[in-house]
Length: 112
Length: 117
Picture 1 (tube, rainbow over the protein chains, first blue to last red):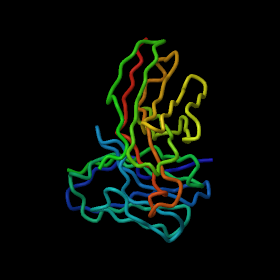
Picture 2 (cartoon, rainbow over the protein chains, first blue to last red):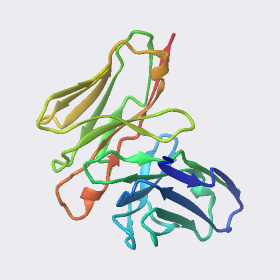
Picture 3 (spheres, chains in turn red, cyan):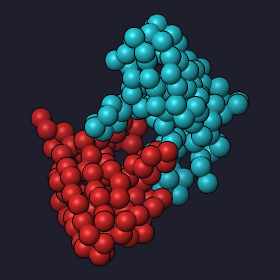
Picture 4 (cartoon, each protein chain N blue to C red):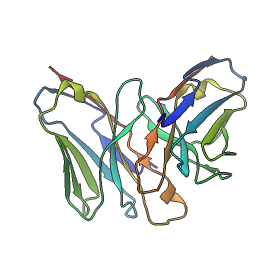
């Protein structure tokens, strides 16, 4: 049972390049989330999804887009990367709102 | 607006000590308060959680104390060990529907705990 899997784990981009982070969960969870973690800032919610085909904005959505075409996958896209988007990105999922949030191991993105 | 304030930012204790991490919240609709533990290079993982109908919850060496009137909750680690060295996040969620915010956990900024041998 893999849980929550994020790919890639590491990526270096140049300013203006685009990329997509993939999150896959095999637990049949309805709810999925993308967070970014920066030193001293904790975990900040970028976008989330409450079910297949739905997405919603979190605290820091600017510069990011997401899609949830399949229940098990939640994609985070950067259309034109900026150095301010250098961060560690975490995907998470849960079955119910009162249940445990399961996190992936993170994707470290550096934008030069 | 920081809805969950966590302190201290970092904490160093000796093995066997009892580190205490505090969190305060503002939103009275919050009714679920988990703590997450994160080791370097890993994602956070649920450690323990409490709901406001109880004032304390204990799981092994970890205890949450909850003060609803003060809107504060804290994590105590008894007999701390070097293996407890990690970053700890408190969080809060309003589980009843409140404009969509019930879907989201709001996290504190984290506390880096170091337990020296």
